[in-house]
Image 1 (cartoon, rainbow, N blue to C red):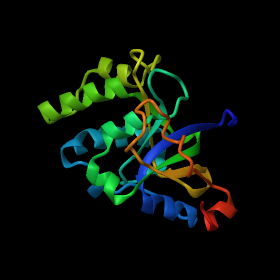
Image 2: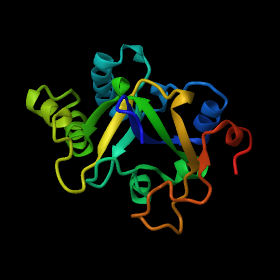
Image 3: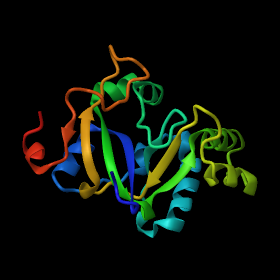
Length: 197
């Protein structure tokens, strides 16, 4: 159980991010690694994150999951990962990382409302200006329907936030299976950092 000052999150990252965290280094997202056609919307989200986490600077936000499939605090499933990641991503080596992040650095939003916001941005090539759309994105309740997800953005990932991680596999797994229900989960303790199993 985490203290009230922290939020449990999950993020899909490439293996190098986990290795950097285990070595004690922070991870910041690079704009060059974000999809070109999504950058306008991502910039808007980065500006919103800056309002609560001024340390973001000019880095892209780090995307995470807070709650999936309409359940508060439920980790993403294999299906969540399969819908987001390409075969190329998986071939390069992806991991799922569980984090305990200071609540003050986390900006939560409805994934359903975000996708609607993203659609408008892609079509109109500008941010939607409607205050109602912003309220739907960040307002309670964050879940709009029984299968909605709550996403989170952060300014960075710090090594001290790491709880556990594992290599992400999709093949031969049930889509409803939680992503961390694999046998090879690595705890973030120092002994495991030196010798993951």
